[in-house]
Image 1: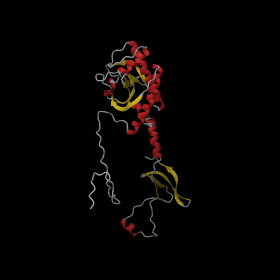
Image 2: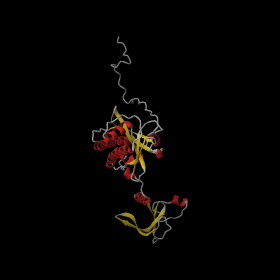
Image 3: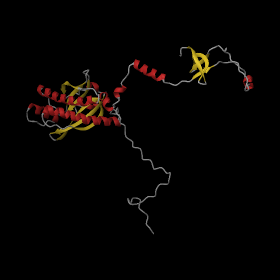
Length: 315
């Protein structure tokens, strides 16, 4: 007598499901919705942003190599969405922050550099020995100017990648801040934050570029430029064009006459129903219940037709 096969035996065989039986449905995956972060971009759009981030990282690395005259490798650490108030909290994370502005000089993002990277690059450009910095110490005017040159190179690389996909170019502002976020006036704004990594004194160190999500729409959605707001005249023309292609039913009405139910019930083949119109009167052509034309009944290619004689305003 054969012993029963244990239920947890990986070698055990199971009988095939009966023909027509459906496979059991997998339990749906439930993900908590995080209300603390924006959810502007879809998964597909986030993938496009990630691909753009890799291009931007390459352009930024190229610009930094030209400035610092030393090998600089930049990798993508991640892309995330944040509200302006959460992009950077100076009291929690020591950073040097520099605002990014658009062509109208409006703040639309920022670059965040940890002291470890910022001080190392500044001292390298000054020709001194690079030191390790953990806190965002006050910078001298010369050091601040040099750090702005570094951020300018980063903005140039980022903008080069942006222009390739039709996104707006950005440039750095004129101030380095370590105690106040440049995005203080954009606390409720939605931002895309691209974290980048490069070699630091103790392994990989992260810095980042945060840009208003509205500036990233052209990157996340290639058709965004085609969806921009149109003028009232353009919208009216579009609607008129669509309306002109709508199919409506046109009805030619020879005439009407009032008859009793008795007379209708008594009608037989061969009887003549006399209408109220004279044979010389024009007949009505109705569209959506409105008389829009009047004409004369004719035949064309063996079919009934109406030769239009009068046009009325269609309202």
